[in-house]
Structure formats: structure tokens, C-alpha cells
Length: 138
Image (cartoon, rainbow, N blue to C red):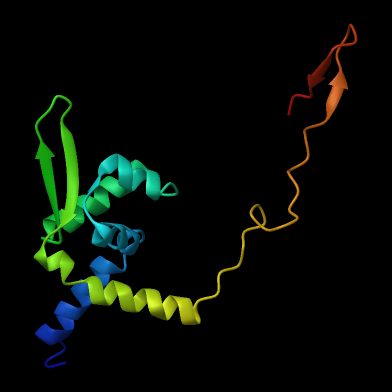
């Protein structure tokens, strides 16, 4: 650091970490390293991500020259995403993060997905006039 400013090397590293460290970016890259995907395919394989966030991440990666968006004329029009040469160059980084995660990262199952978990209790039922069961208003 000279005169309170970062070196260009630090700035480049910081920019790369900021881009790759965004939530879901690594997952998107890992899927695209397997081959081109349509938006619906990415969305289906990353079911926990909203389509809005997926779209934002793809636009960011496209803006950085990591992802290419190809439109195939229709009907129906098909949009496909693939990695550019710059994106393909990330394979080793993504692969090494995967290896590191396998060795060092512990994942605790969520209470909903753990073996032996029970379903949440049903809301109480009360008898409505006339004997029919109805859900109690909350």
C-alpha cells in the first residue's frame, strides 16, 4: 500500500473476490462449467435462488465478460448461457474451492430435512356451529 492506496494487484484481487464471492455466483459457474444452460435449466437446478437474483448474477457475469448470453431465434426464442474463455479459465478456481469444501466445510442438516424430523403440527381445529370442523382464525 503506497500513499494510503492499494496496489493494482490488490485492487484486481479485490474485484475478483467481490465478483466471485457474491451469493450464488459459484453455483452458477459450477453449472456452466458443465456446459451451456438455458435460464430455465439454471433456475431449475438452483431451485433455492429467485429468478430475479439469478438474472442479476447472470447480467453481472455477462458484464464482466465471464458469461455469454446467446439468443437463438424461434419460435420459441431460446436464450442460452455459456462461459466465455475468461469464464472457462475459472475452472481450476471453482474445482479447488469444491475440493476445499469437501475436506473442510461441515454442513448441518436443516431441521426440516434431518432424518426423523416430523411435520409441523396441524393448526387446531374447533367445531363450528352445526358440527362441521373449521380452522381456528388466527
